[in-house]
Image: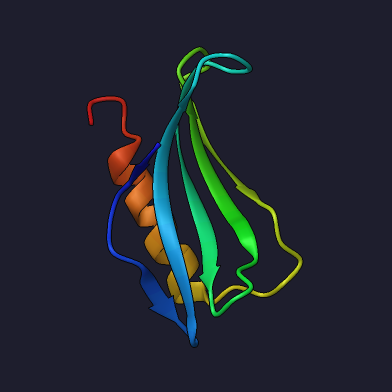
Length: 87
């Protein structure tokens, strides 16, 4: 796993984007968006995953708390760039 950037701050909360690969359960590359502060953090809130077998990129949400649209937009934009097949 690899942190891609400094923490992102939205509405007083801090988030980290981490890149990961998964070849045990599924074949591909992904990004996780983790809510880390203020303590306690809320853990992973979004995941983008490029399935190398199917050739698709999907987004999954792991929170029932609302997320700022600007945060979601930034994450999706980052995922599209980082997970593009030619990236």
